Length: 300
Image (tube, rainbow, N blue to C red; front, side):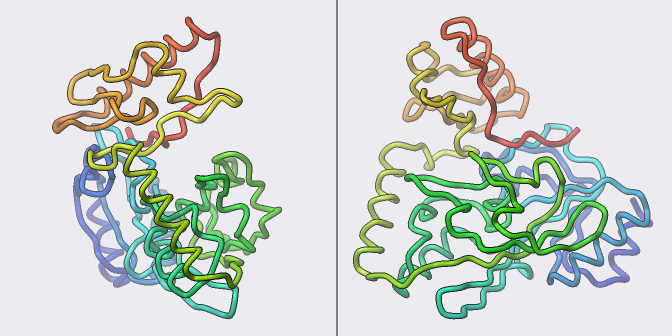
């Protein structure tokens, strides 16, 4: 990796670290080291990083704020690119806004609500980045990214860059085209609406209060672990199967909400994976339902 690091440094792309623990960059505080960790300081720098890794045939992985990730204890091979500072721009044009992929979804929803712009109320408690939210069609409280996205600027695995419309993003429940055709959302245009600031902030506060009362965000976690197998709800199925509070190693199925797995202090990815496997086998046996994970599992 010395050659890669040297090329990245010469290209002046931003922060470059060797063997960076990814536990520092995930909300569940789990994850082994990245061979090389890069946080590009601009969209142009991001493109340079992609060019370098592709020209050297080095594997690369992109992360945002790490809220929907479980990273292997052995870490991630190659280059890990974090969309953060430098890819967190915001431009407003009436009811349309252009937002960088590294922008905090919570911060964005707060800023827009204070300006009386409606559409992002559902995102008030989702601790991810705009890019990650587009990737997985993040949502809550009856809405999601597909309802407000006008178009997304995608940097694909082959280095090509395209603007995709909402239709072309092929959104469905917690998925988009990017699960089938890997790429990075480097920025997106969102369509909001002018509304009443007081009512918007009221809805935002109710959503935040609901999350605080029902979800264990006071502990390191990665958000909802399983997709809801509608019309059933994952949390209810797990709780009714007697698994709420179940602990393996340092990982625990939350006693507050059974579709969350929390890090009680020294959890490893393998502990979380064992709990996930336990839930899958138990729900299959008791309810004949195949549970699918919502959390992204990456790494060696």
